[in-house]
Structures are given as structure tokens and as C-alpha cells.
Image 1 (tube, one colour):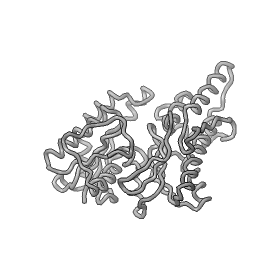
Image 2 (spheres, rainbow, N blue to C red):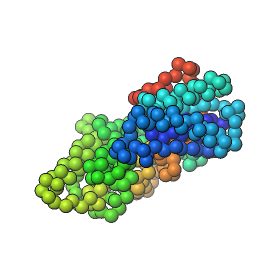
Image 3 (tube, rainbow, N blue to C red):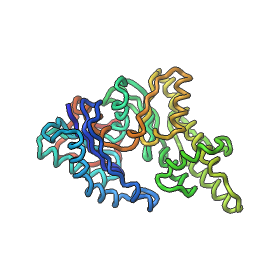
Image 4 (tube, helix red, strand yellow):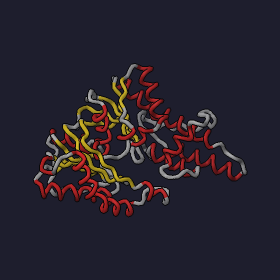
Length: 336
């Protein structure tokens, strides 16, 4: 079964053709990073306009590189939630047009579900049930994946997402967008014990995260040093920050796995590309004898292949939509 996946939730216009939810035939991504870099972050209006300009060519290239025609496609999957509403609308509208013109099933896909599904493309042996840590610029969730289309949220951030915290801390240190990548790189040159930073806990919710206090602590360190005319070692601060975030993410995930009896742990989302998180999770899972799966770096960011992969399983479960489908800026992973 061939699924065309379309992704436009933030600043990547992407399309892909995937066979049977596991085999990538094409994966085309048009990135807007360079344009948004001069503003220090994604500008929603610019992102929407660039999606509108790029989407037709991106989809055509995905079909051409896969060597298939629209007539050979069995379903059209599209990210409809969550994300930037204007950006989402471009992808949803384009997918609806294709579905209407071809008579193919229209498959609505939740963005976080598709990030989890990126692992199916890289690991043919991975099947639910498993526990997944989904970390990105907008989300930090511990999700119990009971089946391909059945999810339960075990823990989540109460304020900033981990990726958002990375980008804001990096921006405060004068690093270019996307800051998380630059911070990760510089952290390798520093001492992770140089700066004691807070490790916030959410009282009464042992699997939940809170990162806003950590972000504020980093910014205060920088401001205090500036006011005193002191030079701060940014490599040490990056290393200490990354060590703290990793400790929080890994610690809560390991506790959830132990309490739920899960022996398979999965990483997903843009921040799953972070070297500190991957190393910390590998060490923790090896110590406990858990199996660990993570997507290759090429599939950590937003892409159409992950949408097509999850779309395949949504279609098998009968989750399709009509022309009434609309984009939704915020939606829990558990809703269909």
C-alpha cells in the first residue's frame, strides 16, 4: 500500500511516499531555516507563505522520486494538528484538493503520532506496545504507545517544552537559530558540573516536566555575569544546561518505564537528535536492560515520511476524513 504524506506544521514543507508504513520511496523536504534565522525564530506568517509557494513542487518531486503517479497512491495523509495554524492550513488544503480530485482517502495525522512513527521506518522490528519520550520545540511527552493508533499520555511538560527551553537558553547566549543545535555542539567542550542548575519537579505528578525555571536560571546567570562585568564560560554553561535537561528527561522516562513494566523505550521528535539526550538514554536503558529505539538524525526533524508511515496505520484503522477536515493548532495525541 502506497501512502503520500504531506507535512507543513511549522517551517518545513515536506512530502513523501511510503510503502506499507515501513519503506520510504521518497522523502522531500524544503526547509525555511535560513530565512527564519535572521529573525531568531519562526515567523508564522512568513512560514505560511513559503509553504504555499513550495508545496506543489515538493509533492510533485516526492511522487517523481518514488517513481509513482497519483493514481497509484492508495491514500493521502496530512498533518492537521497540532502546529502553526496558518502553516497547517496550507498542507490540509492541498491534501484535500488532491483527495477530491483523485477520489483517494484523506487521512488526518496528528503531528506527535507521526514523530513516533518515524521509528517504524528505521526499525522494522519495532512494534507496540512501548514507552516513548517525544521531545521537540513545542512538546515534551512521555507516551504509552499501546497500539499503532492507541496512545496514553503518562507525563508532559507543564510549561516550556524541552526544545523551546534549549532555543531560548541558546538565544540568551547569543547563538543563532536554531539554537538547540549550536548549544548541543558547544556543550561537548564544557564541564557539565560547572554550574549547579535547578531540577524542577512537579509536585503530585512524578512523570511531568517543568523547564521554565531552568531556562530562567540560565538567563539570570548570564545577566548577573554581565552586570558584574564578568566573562562567563559559555561552553561550561551549555554543558551544565544539557546535562540537567537530559537528567530530567531520562529520569522521568526511566521511572515511568519501571512503574509501568515497559522494557522497550523509544525516542522521537526534533530533540531526539540531541547528542546528550541520546547518550543519556542509551546509558540508562543499557543499565536496566531495556531495548532502546531512536530515529536516524535524518528523520528526527519534521518530514513527510513519518506522516505517511503513521497515515498507513490510521488508514488500516479506518481513520479517514472528508472535506470538512480542518487544521487545529492544539490537540492532544489521544484524540482522533
